[in-house]
Image (tube, rainbow, N blue to C red; front, side, top):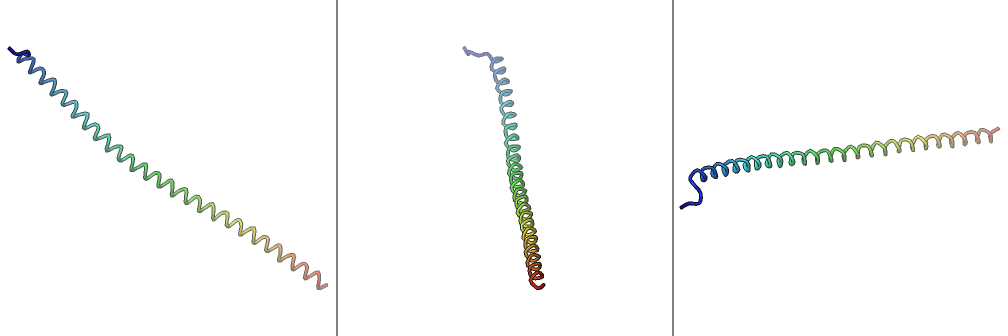
Length: 94
């Protein structure tokens, strides 16, 4: 005599089939999520590169601006020295 009736075996098979369907759906969902995570990682890497590029551009701009300010200061100093020398020469020629 069998422990399970024919109907019990049919019910068990149906339950196992539903469980298998759920497992397959979960596996599909997991694969989809892994693909999304992969695309997100690529986008994150791209954003990090863009941020790095922007930082380099800002640093170059700041360096150029500082250099121009220094050259402007040097030009002003040179003009003042030339003016002082011209004034002294003019004073000595009198």
